[in-house]
Amino acid sequence: MGPYCLRGLWLLCYNTFMNDRSFFKAIQDGALAGAYLLSGEEEYVKESALAALVERVDVISRDLNLQYLDGGAADDVITACETLPFFSEQRLVVCRFLPQGDEGKRLAEYLPRLPETSLLIFFVRGKADEKLGLVKALRKAERAVDFDPLTPFDAARWVRQQARRLDAPITEEAARFLVSLVGTDVSALHSELAKAAFYAGAGQEVTKEVIAACVTRNVELRVFDMVDYFLAGKAQDGLRAYRRMLDEGESPFRMAALLEGNFRRMAQARACIDQGLGREETLKRLGNTYPMKKAYDGARRYSRAELLANLRRFADVGYLQVSGQQKDAEALERALILCMPK
Image (cartoon, rainbow, N blue to C red; front, side, top):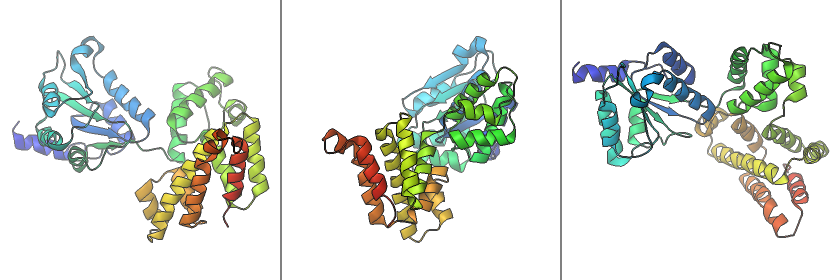
């Protein structure tokens, strides 16, 4: 096959694999060829995709047909890809770093000539740096697979799929209930679903009652609920929610850290609002996630100066306790009261 044909394959084949679901289907169908970038904040699903790729490499020859690269230059990646597979049609090369500068440019120029006998996967933690030339080349060729946090709808669907694998039937309503308690983090959902399935018993339905009995509500979601009381001017309800969390053993330091992060997101959203951006444009820029949606709605109630003042209050909780000026629980309670919109 000539270089122009190879370039055509690089640019045109599998150009719909832009999300995790279609990528998993391609793995199942054995339809992957060339190079792909796996990037995004949903680490559990991303790890599962890599594990599924590795699983397809014949275990007998896996040591020879699977190669991990944790560093090096473009030449190291090219050499790994040019190595012929051993008694197999394809070998898997997993590159856990992204070459930059001239090295990245050289590798981007090589990718259209990648032999069909190698499948090259760039696997990065979190989101890839979109400014890198290699990342731009992969995204332009529609070879970047984004593993973004799931929406509540997708999370509930994932729960039902996973429940079938665990032989633990669950209704759509119960799946949504589980997501409402745990959030959309897949690792946490997997852990809590497994706990509920064990509690229900082998082959038994995971009902809302089972979930309520054994699933621990996500601390961050509880903090969101608590802040909602203060945002609505319901200080007494907010303080009751706060003291209940203290009674259950939740750390004031941890809550303060979550609140600091919440108000930091609000400050980012406020900056976009001040620039004249609407909700959709702001979420597109900062991330269309549940925490950011909550932050945008909250930011509209504050000025930028008020948000920065609240951010400092929650950041100071630890300092006030260590310096002996206030106990951590008291410092956090005072910060919560002062955080109410004026």
